[in-house]
Length: 210
Image (cartoon, rainbow, N blue to C red; front, top):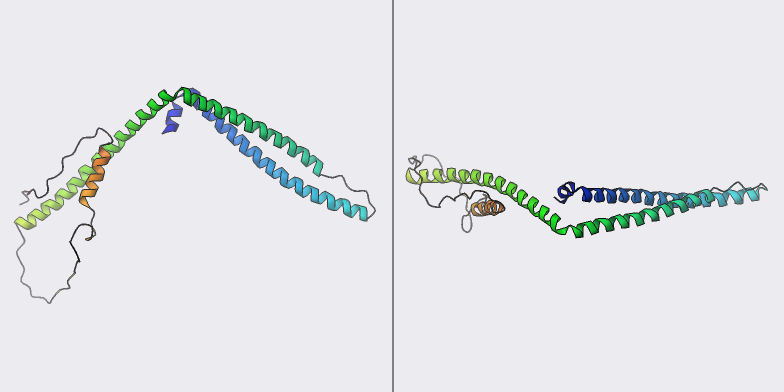
């Protein structure tokens, strides 16, 4: 969300871009220094071995390669230190801007937060409407079964298996969702915005399902 706020403030957007670019350059400079450190160490070993072999063979030692790499390493290290200082200065400029414009940025964040809350509330309202319709279908089926039960069939078959549920039978231990918890969660999400309040279906209310 803060990224969207940055895009609406040109000066802050420029400061953020400068910091990001310097962070990238500093990372690349650090990687180059590490690479040159490794290469310089390898070159030193190679130069010493080559010089020792040449002297033992009575030859003139070859030109060492380490000094050139050591010079490159010194230059890379200095460039890295300069980039680090530039990065700290840019971060200071950004921090100063955020401090001086604290109230404006906070107001923009608050507005964005409210707008996002409206989106959440709208989605939750739609979901709650569907959930209540789902529960209404269950209630209508239950009322139909209670008010107008199907005729009992004559039992001509053998005994059927019986499932035993220990304790109270609830939607939780029967494997179904907790109706109140689902509705409560959605209503809490709806309260994040100005969404329309949906009235709950009264429990036990008979439906004319016949």
